Image 1 (spheres, rainbow, N blue to C red):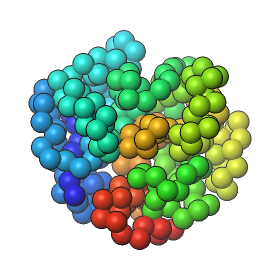
Image 2: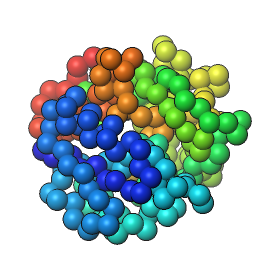
Image 3: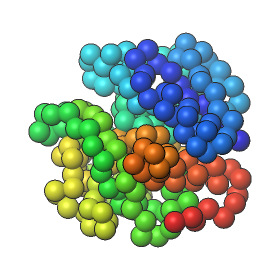
Length: 236
């Protein structure tokens, strides 16, 4: 299988994503330039974190119009696996591939620290390597990560099992204190109805090796690999 990492002007998490997929996971990985229209036969497309186009307007709203996003949207709508980290999540929302909006953090301050994530569904292409009960220790780094949606659409996300990650305590208990940005329902990551597109504000690519103070992010990458290779994935 092959990973593709999109680079937008201002991306700063593209090399982190490349390193996690290429070296920590050991899979073929390539960069995809934002002006290109080719996904180069990639099985997974990663929209990395960073400040695409400077984010001077609504985060991700300009990146959505990059030439490569036409191909990414077509790929996602045909069932391709697409994942966005932080600013990549914002781009997915602005592209209409995921519902809702990402607003300024409720306290209006940038947050950069480790958080714990409760995994709500252990059988998606992004979480199948996690054993039930597993929580993930992964860093955040954002000022616009406050997930918002209308109540009716939140109800649909719950009903359809689209909420994949919630901010939680280390033992998986979802509390207001564990929520770093004011996201509704402690939402840290959601997927599409078809489960092939996932956006998450935390950075699993920055927690893919123990030297980074956690390698829990590697579970997300292992899950995507297992999804294609049809291997038993539960590892911890």
